[in-house]
Image (cartoon, rainbow, N blue to C red; front, side):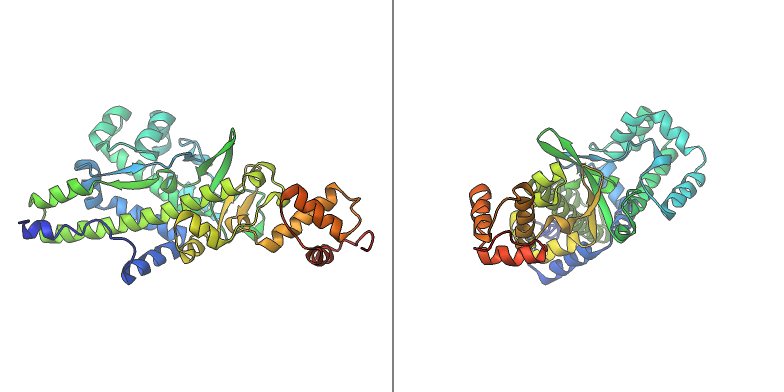
Length: 360
């Protein structure tokens, strides 16, 4: 029979999202601002328990999402992509740690990415100290700086985005990569990917009786937080991947009439998430398109009416000689495989303020 100690640890892994408590916790985390979300992660990763499981026991590690990267070259911290008051905050951060920039530059981009931005392996402080030729105290300083920069990155907006975009949190820039795309996150928090948790070894650790009851409780709380954080990251990653692939023609051309109709409900079904979760996740979020324009994520979810209007506009621009609503409807059906009734053509034409050439 399993010991009582082991029985206490069997619920470590989060159960499927069915309980009302878990649903509420996830909803709260999805609703949380990116500023608060980054602060939450920063606090967790400074916790001695997290560092024990991550660095000492090596039971946690990061796993980057396929096709993702970090938007800014790492050691160029003075030109980190933020704007407005955040630029002043970066200056204050650097000023509070004299000599930190020189230390980071001496480490070099490759090692800085490997040991600080994208630590895919569980390197100990001693290993990092040896490989980068820096003191352990300097490792802590750099880690704190990177976490603080992650918080500031939530305010990044391109210079030409306009004041109407200032309410949005920009998540990533989208790059073209052959026939596909790359997602270049603006924050190390997202660029590092999700946490991988070795539940079996954690249960072995708990069964070893090296932790007291309070520590067991704290491990459970920590893992639950990490799982909720993972879920938010997973949802956002899946949303971005699904949308840029669905709207590939638009992402490559930048033409509004290339957008395909796609609802939030359809998106939720595609990524196997609740529509309410999708709605919360994309609220006031934006991305930078390959042509360097910041666009709200919701703009990639045009409704069918918008799609038909843009399709009509495109058809009339390309073939201005079409003489009737019936002819336009037939041409759109033949060329695009989309049925728009003659009556709908008439309504859309009036909305676009385009006169009919010849009556039927």
